[in-house]
Structures are given as structure tokens and as C-alpha cells.
Amino acid sequence: MAIRIPFPRRGAGAPRPAEGRMTVVEHLTELRYRIIVSLVAVAVGMVIAFTVYDRILDFLREPYCDVLPPGEPCTLYIRDPVEGFTTRLRVAGWCGLFLASPVVLWHLWRFITPGLHPREKRYAIPFIVSSIVLFASGAAVALITFPRALDFLVTVGGSGIAPLFSPGPYLRLVVLMVVAFGLAFEFPVVLVFLQLARVLTSRGLASWRRPAVVLIFMAAAVLTPSQDPWSLLAMAVPMYLFYESSILIGRALRR
Image 1 (spheres, rainbow, N blue to C red):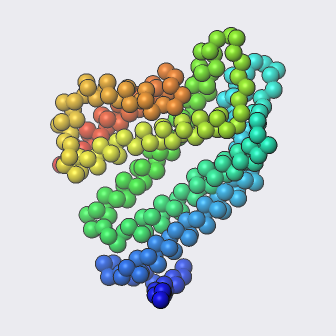
Image 2: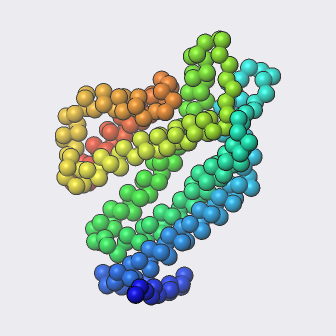
Image 3: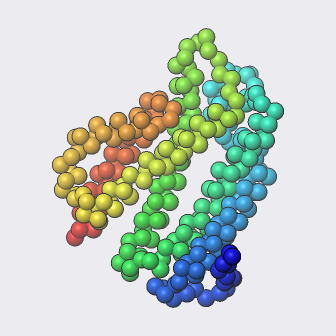
């Protein structure tokens, strides 16, 4: 005979259980509530992005239009009857997740807060805020660098090759560029965290500058999806500056 465990409902205005005193059922109820609200926020963001899809696509299509010869129609060609619809859904999904990210991160933060000590909470907020700012900065750098990267990819094949892109591979490259740069710009957060955890020291990082430069450029060459020199420099140079800044931050935190 199946045994059903009743899950108490938690409304938006219901009081939060006392920290450290939540049962397993209350933890699951809390998790369910946070997930549902986050999914609703993503769905609302997707609806908004779905309605303004044409403007978003025009913005993402600009680098492709810039590399085409003058007078050439700036059109992404589909090779599958359903590719146009799936492209719209894919763009709406990514943009919806981006629009809903503040709500998702807020509920993630509220869910993990009861398990943190006061000292950990003091560090957690700067880490979360800096992670969001750095990821957004990396995404902006990716979008700024992408036109040069696309121009290199189109012209490097020679004059006998003309671009004729379909929306799937083209938009996939844009998303990979944004994600790669966003994650690469989290580099200082990782280094500062390792220094706080006493895995690394600022003195050790300062003594590893020369090999770190080589490793940073190697990592940038691997992480950049377009594999062009412009993207490599746009990722490697900020990562090295982040390396130096993390040394200074580590020294300040140690004091």
C-alpha cells in the first residue's frame, strides 16, 4: 500500500520557518515553492521575448549584415520547415532565462540562506553580486567582439567562399560566445574564493605570474568558440587583469 506524505502549502505571505529548524518536508516544500516561482518568471520572460522576437533577431543579425557585400540581402536561410519555429522558441528561451535571472538568483539565495553562518552570509552577497556583474560584462564584451570575429571567420576562407548562414548554427555561435565570455569573466571570483578558502595565497599567485600568462592565453584559445585572434585577445587580456586584481583583493582580505 502506497504511503502519501502530505506537503503543506506555502503561500507568498506565509512566514518562513526558523533557521536551522526546518524538517525534511519543510525543506522540500520550500524548494518546490522556489522552483515554481522561478519557472513562472522564466515563462513570463519567454512570452515577452517571443513577442519582441523580430527586434531581438534584428539585433543579433547585425554582425552578419555587416560582413556581407553592399546590396546583398541580409537573410538567414532555413533548410527545415520547422527550423523557423524552433529558432523562435530557442531565442525566446535564452532571452526569457536572461530576463528572469534576477528572480531565479534571488530565490536561490533565499533557499540557501538558512544553511549559512553569519560570516558566510557576509561574503555571499558580494560574491553573488560580483558574479552577476562580471557575467554581464563578459556577455557585453562577447557581443562587442563578435562582429570582428565573424568578419575574420568569413574572410579567412578566401574570396571564393561566400557566407550563407542558417539561423541554427549562427545563433548557436552567438550563444556560445556569450556563455564562454561570461564564464571566463568569473575568473577573479574563483581566485578570490580559493584565497579565502586558503587553497591559494596572494603571494603564491604573484610568484606564478609568468606561467599564469601562458596558461591564460592557452585557456582563452580553447574557450573561444570562434577560434579567432580578436576573441582570444578580448578574453585573455581581461583575464590577466582579473588575475592581477585578485592578488590585490586577496591581500586586502587577508589584512
